[in-house]
Amino acid sequence: MKKILIKNAILVNENKVYESDVLLKDDRIERIDRDITEASAEVLDVNGKYLMPGIIDDQVHFREPGLTHKGDIASESRAAVAGGITSFMEQPNTNPQTVTIEKLEEKFAMAAKSAFANHSFLFGGTNDNLEEIKRLDKKACSGVKLFLGSSTGNMLVDNEEVIEKIFSSTEMVISAHCEDEGTIRANLAKYKEKYGDDIPVKFHPLIRSEEACYLSSSKAIALAEKTGARLHVFHLSTGKETSLFRNDIPLKDKKITAEVCIHHLWFADEDYDEKGTLIKWNPAVKTAQDRSRLWEALLDDRLDVIATDHAPHLLQEKENVYTKAPSGGPLVQHALPAMLDKYHEGVISLEKIIEKMCHNPSILFDIENRGYLREGYYADLVVADLDNPWKVEKSNIAYKCGWSPFEGHTFGSKITHTFVNGHMAYANGKFSPETHGRRLTFNR
Image 1 (cartoon, one colour):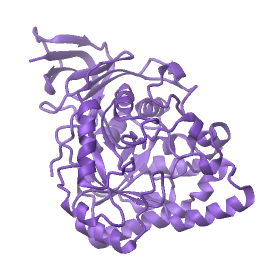
Image 2 (cartoon, one colour; image 1 turned 45 degrees about the vertical axis):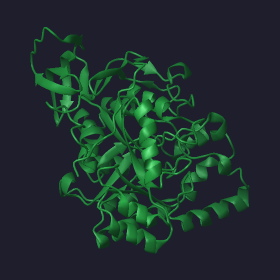
Image 3 (cartoon, helix red, strand yellow; image 1 turned 30 degrees about the vertical axis):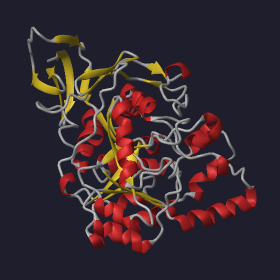
């Protein structure tokens, strides 16, 4: 039996900010109280730093198997805990793709050996694996992923009859990448005719346009309403799409939900001149007005979750001409510091950050005993020093790919400690050599 007593913390949890101690026993939170004394416990005095639930990231690409030159479960989960992320949900567009139950279980076996954070994997829907989706145990993974528009990994699902059958055949959360393939192809052909392969990256949001996003997401929502499916729309990028979602009922009662990612809340199209293909994502970073409307919808609860869509590529891959430069970038290490900067700017409260990055993913995916600071819950915790500026440099980047779109930026807050299942996985820049991540379980 191991006990750790965290003293003199400022807790951010369930819409409150307050001083408290927290006692951990083995992998759980045993007690939360103002002044705890426990002679047998190892004491960590955080001296007024902020203690939050560990972040739950519902969308990452950790590249294993098959693409491990970009990243792997071990390297990227280490980077995640350095950023206060204690649980992740990884996407199916690896090599081979996670489109059979056998491949899904192989991924879980890999993660059991190498994941520094808790984990689940989404099962990929295709035009021809409906029977596998029907066989899925709803407790086996976090849900089904559909690419309703092309993206890295070539998992486009474009057979509308199949899509409707998938929507009608599963009670699990269907997470969707929504961009209309026909619109994108037509736009790309127009720019290729003018520029060849070396299209200026500033045109990326015009190729993967507002129209492409809205057409696909509105169609998916209409189908979810028709079939009663549980739909979660990933990485909203346009202001126009925010009108499709509602905030007049609690999250637990919503059948249709939405996520917004760090890069769409941080960057805008004027940043392409400086960052180039380093901020080339699908869907694209769009206008400052889109960014502003995404923030508005996040803060008024039309958008439910903040995630990363962490998707590392090698720098030499990203530095290719437009048509050959892959979309995606690494974000897990810097997501919470980025949101804490927005807190310092007065854009978002600490309580709202924790709601969108911890509580809501737990509610949305019915995760068992995680996402909150509660007695009896798993001890997934993050300690943040909100007055400790640090600059992102090559020397402190933990991603296997070795770069970050935030390179050169000075964050105002630093993650000092991360606990995973009661184990100190990260402390003051140093990682535990042991892995303590576990397979996520669900209340379904």
